[in-house]
Amino acid sequence: MELFELTAKELSEKLINKEISSEETVKSFLDRIEKTEPKISAFNFVNNNAILKAKEIDNLRLKNNDLPILSGVPIALKDNICTKGILTTCSSKILENFIPPYNATVVEKLESNNIINLGKVNLDEFAMGSSTENSAFRVTNNPWDITRVAGGSSGGSIASVSASQTPLSLGSDTGGSIRLPASFCGVVGLKPTYGLVSRYGLVAYASSLDQIGPVSKTVTDNAMLFNVIAGNDSKDSTSLKTEIPDYTKSLVRDVKGLRIAMPKEMFDDGISPDVKKSVIESIKKLESLGAIVEEISLPLLKYGLSAYYIIATAEASSNLSRYDGVKYGFRAEGNIKDLETLYLESRSQAFGSEVKRRIMIGTYVLSSGYYDAYYKKALKFRTLLLQNLNNIFSNYDMIVSPTSPITAWKKGEKTDPLSVYLADILTVLVNLAGIPAISVPCGFDSENLPIGIQFMSKSLNEPILYQTAYTLEQELNLNLKPNF
Image (cartoon, rainbow, N blue to C red):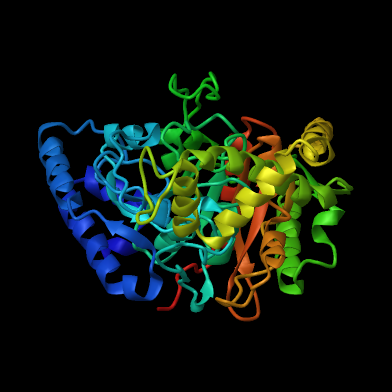
């Protein structure tokens, strides 16, 4: 078996036992990237200095066996996470030459644990999209079928793991941007509790919704990486001050007595028959293991997508106003007569169509004539949703649903923006409420495309999500290696 085929846990064990070196490991993944990248198009930038870092870690290991558990294991980073001295573009022309002078907090944590950055991976521009077709540089392909989308916005993060270009990656999730592509590409993706992972150094799309999360092939790898990145950060005012458990201790094969709510609205006629069948079979599997599953009603679901896109675009309109052609990033040249023209030309030339669309929607809902009618109502809905979910979690340990209503669609198939937005209908409630959710593979459709099941729980209840996801993963034992 090639090194690139191993999980992060397997690599870690072999590195600790000195069966392999970090240098060998990194070379294996860099060779894999070189071989597969023409088909996958996941990377915006490959960090060839990773070999030098690997050699440093090998030398450290010769002097000290007591290194962090993931020392020498590679990772890829979504290209909206700031990396000192390395391009951070958000897959946008407006930042195509931006090199941050500092690291994001999660990057500092990775470096202190000797985890090796293989490079920056593709996304929908400024994380706005559900297919990674909105990148200014490339469309990332689904390793299970390269004619199909990888999902988004963290398409590069997910496809790179699915294609064994890296054992681990970090993505960001604003409305399903980790979980949706994880479902499409057959990997594990966690959206953590809001504030549990620092957002310092994450380029903002919608600040009250964005959250960095781990991506991996297995639930075990996911928990190992989450151990590294979770925790309070004084640089992030929204960061939670709470004790961080060892999430790997939650990886026990036991769901007996767990109470799971199954909202009937999340299994209605809009769900693909293949998706519905696979998810329900997985739920029955959990029931057979002793979980208690009951159908409930969540009528607020039908308003979730509208509220999400009002709040997200409003925050995007505010956050993206900093890209003005003055301080940093792309600056229009030519016949620029005044400051207003500079703003207009810089933004119109460098922002893609989806980013412009969301800025315009956000500006509209924040305008004086429409603030009360749209934005204020969306905020009221958010409060009502949180109250509703808290009531559910007072009786149940978690909620279960499909991650996505459908499997990966063909590239260029969805030209109407609304049809793409609808792919997020089952994931956005989690971000609006700030609660955690995990997507784990649960089967395949008739065309052998992966299907994901989503588990959601109350804030800071990641351990119960890991326990349930791990139990299902071990029971199903799916073959999650794409043929390419």
